[in-house]
Image 1 (cartoon, one colour):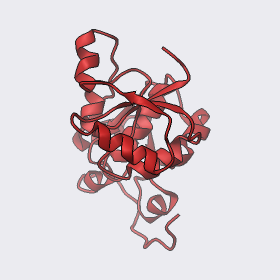
Image 2 (tube, helix red, strand yellow; image 1 turned 90 degrees about the horizontal axis):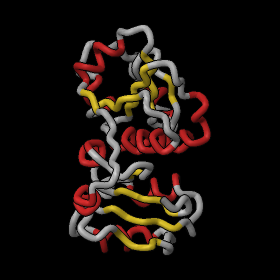
Image 3 (tube, helix red, strand yellow; image 1 turned 135 degrees about the vertical axis):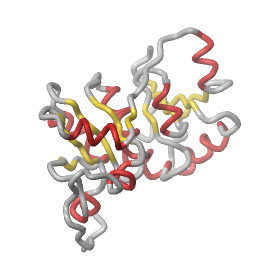
Amino acid sequence: DRKDILILDCREATEFSNSFVPHSLNIGLDSNFAMWVGELIPDINHKIALIAPQGREEEALIRLSRVGYDNSIGYLKGGYETWLKSGKETDNIKRIPTTEFENLHNLENSYVIDVRKKSEFESEHVIDAVNIPLNQLENRLPEVPHNKNVILHCAGGYRSMIAGSILKRHNITNFVDVMGGMNEIKKTAIPVSEYVCPTTLL
């Protein structure tokens, strides 16, 4: 329960969503791990305790130290299974398929947050969605409504799970995450803005 230690869970999104250590931050090892660590953990001296996919603990530690995070206090031996077996408290994040998103999206009190970059959002987005890029989320938490059904998505599900873990760390629980993100949403009848070729990569 030490507040100065950040639990960084680098398992992939689906695994993390099913069950995780409360207040841990999810940044999956199999995508832009180093980049998002750099974006979301501003203090490189932060004490970090790792929960890694089994057998990849050393890899996670090496990848952290490559980007200057040398203060890892270690990893959970035996991975997340060890935590589960200990009987300690766990948390989870509800993920929904796009079919369920279609139903939710039609309800009056739904609020869609797209955590992709501004350029991605401007290029194509769900009509009525609000863009809060992942790297700005921590500073824009007051914009997340507490009285609506918040629906998070990104392009494929990696960044929105990071976003979900950030919301949970701040005790915000009134949200679900869309599996497959924009890639899957485009295959549904959900109204999406007309595609515009991005002029910038911001």
